[in-house]
Image (tube, rainbow, N blue to C red; front, side, top):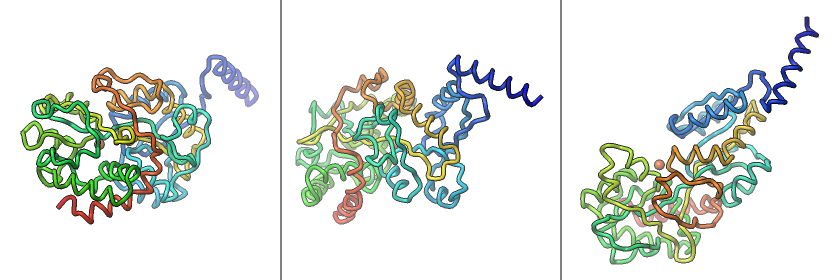
Length: 339
Ligand SMILES: [Fe+2]
């Protein structure tokens, strides 16, 4: 009987191989995600369809590092999905990721959007841009630098300077101008604020809609979220996106990305999943549901995202943002940006 079973199995395996299917053995990959279920599920379904590998996903609001540390070598986590370069780097710095060396990942993800050591990989991009009042702002273009100019006095809204999105932007300013000039710039922006930093990115657009300010800083995908929300559609209709650039560079982008967990119990499945996420098909799905930009330059944008216009991402490697982060936070505190 045993021989028969083996024979049947190998025949099945042969047929599966001919059909291009993956092995039918019970296979799984465990994902820890800061990204919301509805953004991820279509990708998980597609991955299982293609590979037969089951996905188990745990969604976390916070505490990823504490959880992985507590689980230690017994952690079931294979792949970690998160947004923001600082969160990816914090995982790496805590020793909770491992190096992945994959030609597919290297091909699909441009060098400046993956860790030089191979410990994190970006999947989508979001630009940090200016939401501008359709009624009260006529400028077609802006630089980040000129947000500190007197013409914007009393006209800017933003969330807290200590939020990861703003710290990444300030870190990028430091990369272009150094610490002293960045501090002076941020003081100039603070002097131009219409109100104390508060709320999230969408709350700033609401404030533009309500006439409290004329421009705000925000991430691009919030436009997509607002236009598809009954209450927020009016806020979105009151503004347009301006892609600012640095005087000597492109537009500041941040990422969503992935890493392989240090103690991944299913490493080869984890690798397959990561390579799948980097594929053009998967990036198209992922970017579309998230209203983001695929990192793969050949993947088409969603019609909505494309309607916002085009931009050149700042070409600095995102890794350098992490190096500046502490100093960026120091500047924010020194000038009491939120005060
Ligand atoms: Fe966000």
